[in-house]
Every structure is written in C-alpha cells, then in structure tokens.
Length: 329
Ligand code: RAM
Image 1 (cartoon, rainbow, N blue to C red):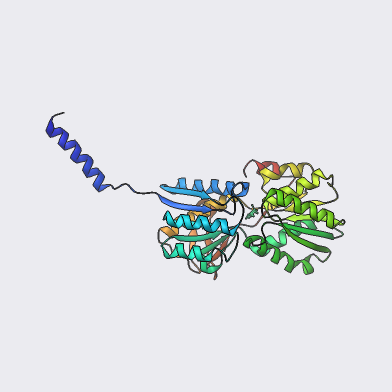
Image 2: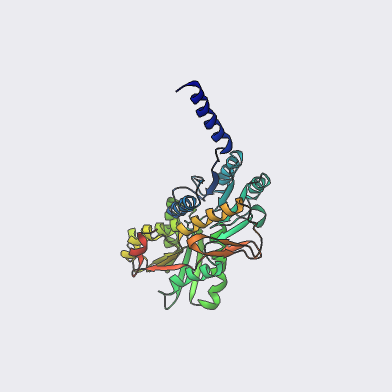
C-alpha cells in the first residue's frame, strides 16, 4: 500500500470512529432478595430475554447470599458507584433500602421495585406479580379446598420484613374470618427463604401443633422445605403443604402426595417486565399515576395512584398440569 492509500485508510477509520462513537450498553441491575433461589433465576432468564429483544442492554443479575436488607444496601451502594442506568429490586425490607435507593435516584439512576416492594419514597414505581388481595385469598383457598371440615393451619413465610409476603399474609388474615371461618390460623413463622431455617421452622410447627392439617408457605423456598419435612416425617395425608411454588422444583411433592395444589405466576415474565420497564424509564417515560408501559408479549400495565401495577392472576398447579409447567419454570 503506498503512503497515499495508507493515509486514506487511516483517515477513513478515524472518521468512522468519530462519527459512530462506541455506544455503551445500557446497564440494568436486577437486584434479588438472595442468590441461589430458583424463582429469581427464572426471573433473570426473563430479564435476559428482554435485554436480547431490546438490544444493547446489559443485565447485572445480583443479590446478597442471605435474604437481608443489609446485604442489599451494600449491593445498591456498589451499583451507585458503578453508575448503572437502572436498578430493579425485589426488596428484603420496604423501608431499610429507601435511603440508598434515594441516593441512586438523586444520581439519575432509574429505580423500580418488582416482586417485593420498596416504600414509595425509595422507588419510581412498583411492579406486583399479581393483585395482593387475590394472592392472600389464593394461599388460604389452596389449603381450605382440601379441608372441608376446617382445622388448624400455619404459615411458613420468607423473612419477617419481606414486603410481598407480609402484604399477602395481611390480606389472608383479613379474608379468613368471612370466607374461611372453619380455617384456624395458629401461627406464622419465618424461614428467611433459607432452606435450613425453613426446614427447622416447619419441624417446629409440626412439633408445636399436633393437630396441624396444613402448612401454607407463600415462598418457593419455604414450600419445598415444608414438603420435604412432611415427606421425611411420613406425614403425607396428615399434613398438606400448599402455598406458592415453582413447578420445576415442586413437581415431586405433588407426585408424592405431600401437596395437593400450589400456585404461582410466571417468574420469567416478571423479570422480563422489570427490564422492559427499566429500559423505558431510561428512555424518558415518566412513572406517574395513569402512565402505561407496553411490555412486549406480556401485555400492557398501567400505574395506579401509588405508582404500582399488577400483572396476571396466580395460576394453580396440581396433578393435572404440574408436569407441563415444570418444564417451563
Ligand atoms: C420466593 C421469594 C419471592 C416470592 C416467591 C413466591 O422465591 O420470597 O419474593 O415472590 O417466593
């Protein structure tokens, strides 16, 4: 190549570099209650799907090893330092995270909560998987359907500060006396979405309440632990386990009879929607009451007066359909 040609080539390359500056990908952090939870892994799959559809989006899937607010605060602070574009969080506490998330918003980072909410001051909007009252009613109904004569039931929850489980339990308690008068809720205990703690709490319930007829676990981690305890203690047919379960993790307990039925929504769609919303906020869409977000194949959501929106109704899984859904999530 002669000098003239060389110069022409390098000028062309330089021009290309100037006219098309390397666009840096949009970075959206999906902060979950804790890592190692299959429900959040499924949500992360949906998040990646949304990122691939949008293009040039990097999903940072992160969370503490234990489901604590302290662990999430550390992560949020580090995401602020990395100057990500958005934080989409499923919170371990509605209030504890507010100061760090406020700081993120002050720096121009878009913040939403999804699955488990943050108080209004700490986020721009919240995405519920489903209507809170409906979930509260569903978790009781799943147990009551198999207790025609009523009886003692107990709830094995996630952490005691989890926004979502606490809201569902409140809704369940509200509806109990009128809709399920024969169901007697004897205790609410907390397994912290930790298998070992959930197992111990389930054993504790069985030891303390000899007439216990059902354990209701509105957490995908707790429900597996409870069903395993019922199986190991040979209590199948005596104590029914119900609640919110990931079909892929729970199929064996429907198969062995330790549970008659559970429910859930599509966690992949939830993670997908969290990323779609974050991307639209980055693009300038305002989160305000009445604002709508088009969420691809998931449909459209519209924010209510508290800047929250809910997705689909929970779906029931039992012997008739768990096999099919266990292959999806
Ligand atoms: C656990 C988590 C999550 C909840 C599901 C049902 O995986 O606590 O927040 O939505 O259960």
